[in-house]
Length: 115
Figure 1 (cartoon, helix red, strand yellow):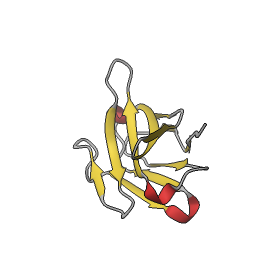
Figure 2 (figure 1 turned 60 degrees about the vertical axis):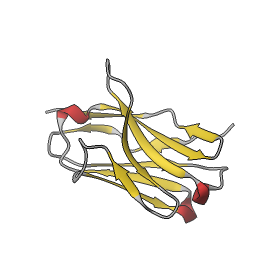
Figure 3 (figure 1 turned 90 degrees about the vertical axis):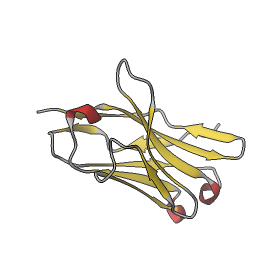
Figure 4 (figure 1 turned 135 degrees about the vertical axis):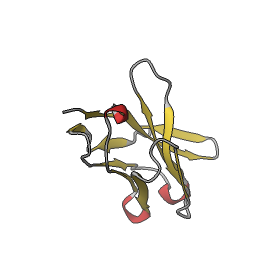
């Protein structure tokens, strides 16, 4: 069973930055579309950002200009750099990898933006 492993969450003040990482061992990583999703209490899960194997990116409207997704295929790792964080960015952030019929998730990491 493939399990993606996220790290880098935590508590940060408004305006601060965090960098999340997601390791994806045991898969042919370079073939996968990788993405970050988030879910806050009482809200539906939403797409934060995605990146294709070739490096094309897509962002949710609420994070455009503040967050950057990137990947290093040689390390089987995808990153999410989050700048200018706002309290409304508080959520559990989860990593996802998709390729054909394969769909893998991590367990999530909590990001809390509060003063």
